[in-house]
Image 1 (cartoon, rainbow, N blue to C red):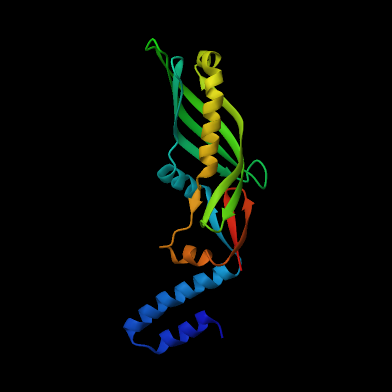
Image 2: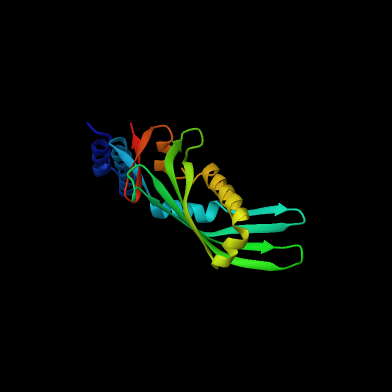
Length: 200
């Protein structure tokens, strides 16, 4: 006899107060049973919300007496399995500020696209984007790229490392389903817009 069936029999004969309690218990058991049968999905919206709240990118680079540069990532959008089945892409938008020794400053808008492979780290109960690689970027106005392209390359590499070293999603101990997942995950699969965490 299944756990959910047993819970239903107890609820039928119990006091109304306990019937409500049993219904809640039955729902939880059913959720766990569903988890045990396949996978738990994390969608792009969940990942992007986590990135916006938990991962801040603000990098500075200085060549003393020559130039100072600062880049801030203001928006990031992760797309899962849309271009290739096993990859994710990170679309970022930010601001670049350049300061010269004579106090001249330049401001520019930066767009960038990175490609990476999602990986689940069991020790940290978190999803990471491995093998982060810059696919393309665009700097406006174009004159800024012509003048400061050598600095931009180094800044883009630092953003790449920052995004690759920080989780893009971490399981929540306060969520019963996600807490259960920590001990029952076998791996992950990707489909357009989702990461499927495979369970025992």
